[in-house]
Length: 312
Image 1 (tube, helix red, strand yellow):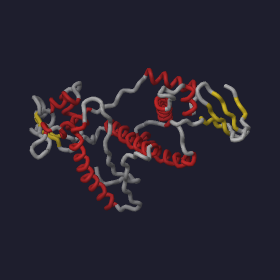
Image 2 (cartoon, one colour):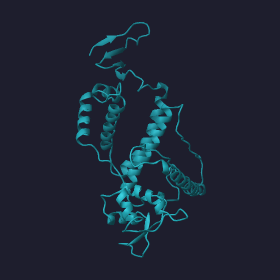
Image 3 (cartoon, helix red, strand yellow):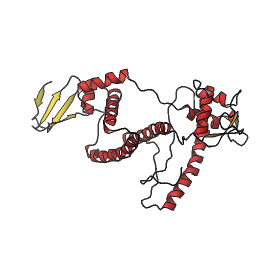
Image 4 (cartoon, one colour):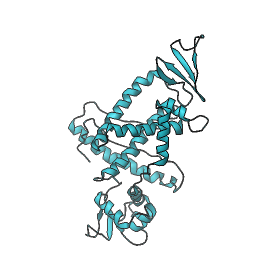
């Protein structure tokens, strides 16, 4: 590494040092190391303070959930470091190649030795893919024509037997999970009920909700949090980076909504929102495939700063 004092016209001032690295340059300004941005990392300096305020609001909501689940700052810091290194490596390389350790260090502010350590750990301890098969099973039950009656409503199903049956759905959605475990999950989550009076080992089962929304299983709800929040942030990031081809992103909010208004909001969102989601589910089912394609969809949620909506 060599340091060059820049004093030519149009150059950084004398308190700036430009340091040459094997694949790129960086500027040291008032002792702060900043990478020179390329096409993948350009940003508007005037947006930095707004970005920091937005991140703080996101982290306040996230910190509240983390601490309730017993995850402290040290654990969060380790997760954040791993993610920063992973994203910089995979998405900010040059000429479609993974970023070098030096580039990752420049982009993240993490020193090269620590970058190397994190990358080694990531290769050795790759996280398991989180997948809740109940989501797919209920989706098939609602969507497939063989599992709906003449009015388009989900059929009551025999637990065992040929299609249409819960066993046939299990074979498609989660073949490695025993039918008893699948039945128990659907009953305990409140998604389905026994249709023959046997609440422990029913021979026939009925769907009672329009979607899989776990009521008591906290781990399943946390899985949904990871998927849904990431999807919303991806859309916001896309709309910032691709203003000429934005994805739909809208909301309606009120500064001084009464408790009666909160209850009405919950009711309207649940009724109208579910109606729209079911309409889209039916319309787009013909465009889905068992392999390939993209993960895409539409999310609807109710929010309030107090967290109170008087509804489930």
